Image 1 (cartoon, rainbow, N blue to C red):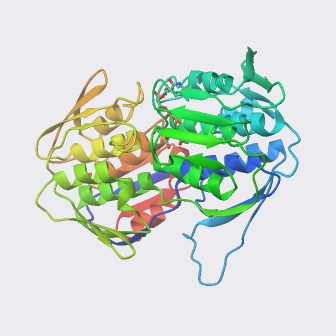
Image 2 (image 1 turned 90 degrees about the vertical axis):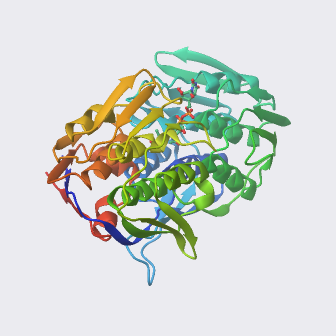
Length: 429
Ligand code: EPZ
């Protein structure tokens, strides 16, 4: 298996292009199941999760093609994907595919809405927490679906199609909002979703669905009103910039010092994280082609954070921020409220010399003067990249194994960072 080798110590300087958001691309691809016509997505990142989802969708009968390189385009430009679900031949999403990627469970919404039936494997637990699917089941039932659980599968059907209903989520869920919103676009009558997720990826999906002919009001708020329509149609939609990739590289620059323009990044998607980052002593400026991140040599101020649904501090940046705090000039507290087990990076950061103590959902990070390189590994995507950020300042060599986690969500990470002056390379096994 590939590893990433980093020699710490270099500041970052230059321009780093931000890709389309993985967590928007995945539901957008799934939305192609809602129409017989072709959905074209621009700015799709080249990631393992995207390739995996293409395989899952093609199992349902979706044809897809990817545009070849265009004149003047470099290797870091996003890809254009055409998805056509003109004939859905299979409404089962099998365990061996769904278990590899939780987001593939979301096909249950479009399959039920368009075909009136779906048999989708339960996704199971995962490294960051139990992640149940009760909100999906209750939401689809509120839209009139009959749901049974049979040998690890959710088996759902409708009597003559889904019907609009009122869905009140007990807790904000990105995936359940995506799924019920997609299902409701083709249900008869009006659906109201209360306590809906407001993450920019939900807004991106909603805007795309509207472009495809859906009737959705309240986009960007926690209450969505969806008026079902007879059918959706072809549309072309660019995937929103990846705010988590943006925040990750901003924290990398805050960690190493230097000045980097994150090209194509959008500051409005990251207000709370940038507010925190500026309190650490990092300068963030909107520029014509993106966002400029700058930190001088004055050291990193400690800041306490609590993760929260959007517009709060994102759980997907918690590990990266913890890496930054390991080198702060004091003590910080990091509280994780979204997932119960999202602190696996703590013991790996400790291997690099970090001083972190854990008490339930709260990590207390005592900043240290030096980190020292070591072999490390992580069990999820954002935890892995937090080790990369730490490795960029650790003395000597850090080797991050299980790179396949990084490949799920960060496009050409080592190329982007080395172009800005980091000593980082992939070692192929
Ligand atoms: C999405 O996961 C993201 N994944 C996650 O990013 C992200 O961490 C998470 O939202 C929170 O922002 C994608 O977009 C592909 P949730 P999702 O449903 O939708 C509980 C990454 O690193 N819950 O918003 O699966 C759940 O257990 C990934 O890119 C229920 O209790 O997360 C959690 O505590 C990791 N019952 C909370 O809600 C349910 O039926 C929020 O989870 C559904 C969720």
